[in-house]
Length: 102
Image (cartoon, rainbow, N blue to C red; front, side, top):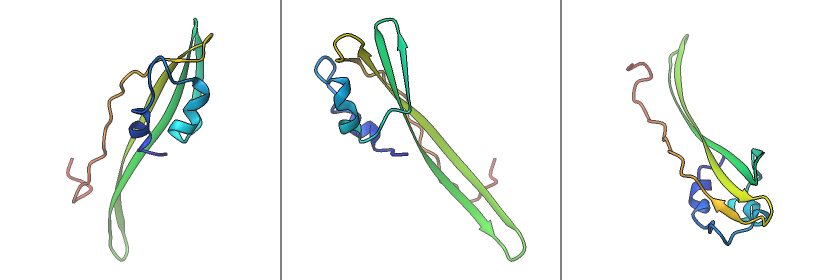
């Protein structure tokens, strides 16, 4: 779980970066690898979590906000060169002062 993976993904160059270089660039192994047609899609999942809680002597109230994202990298199956890095929307969990304001 490394939220900095999207920052490192900016150094991937479409048409120049090879699939063998991805683990070194992203400092992670792909979560999943899918082959469809002549394209291999590597998926790198990462996330962030924030927890708030109110602890009393006898009772404890807490709330957790999770955000799981996936970076997709499409690689040509024959040449091993990156052909696309589709953009994914990033969500940052909110900090909340009181865990029950919904």
